[in-house]
Length: 282
Image (tube, helix red, strand yellow):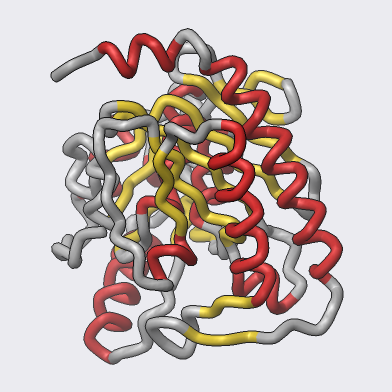
């Protein structure tokens, strides 16, 4: 593997992070303006897979700013892929963008809505920004430099007993009986461990940031996409946690499944209680 692009880009990551945070705040202003307004809602893959005009507007703004400031960078955006562009991760410096993570929350005015900007070089996530536009929480990390929320350093929980853990999980957007049985059986297996509780925040990125902040011990989900967890995975790892495949093997950004945990004891305990499925790749 040619590491030259990675080494050259790593030298500029502080500058790229500053740009990413400013861009996330600008996108957040658009989200806050629209948050309490009536919204035009469309569906994508199913009745619970929602998109609004704000998702599309914010992504266009983000991509335009990236192209203007870093014309040699590539991008993968949720709404661009939904519109027909290929989800093609190469060795080139690449932004992976979710303009509104938590669209259902946004539609229902539930205040957990995040702008997610992940940045990869040589297919390696090296920088992440997750901005809760409603609360103003700005999570950010550069590989090797720690993780922060509003400039305050964050760290994962030290809990190693799964039975004393709070787990983040989601029901997902699929509503076919087979997929629902899969999700509900896994949730039943987790809760009957027993764990302290299972919480659903409605945003994959903010679920992972809750683990990074020590507010929860783990998060697991099948069927999400690279833009849901790329940025947050960097933040989690820089906070001392683990971003893994659900089988506790290395995370594959294109595999559409993740287990985020504060440590390997929690990860392995949770993984052993799950049924695992393969999904169509991004």
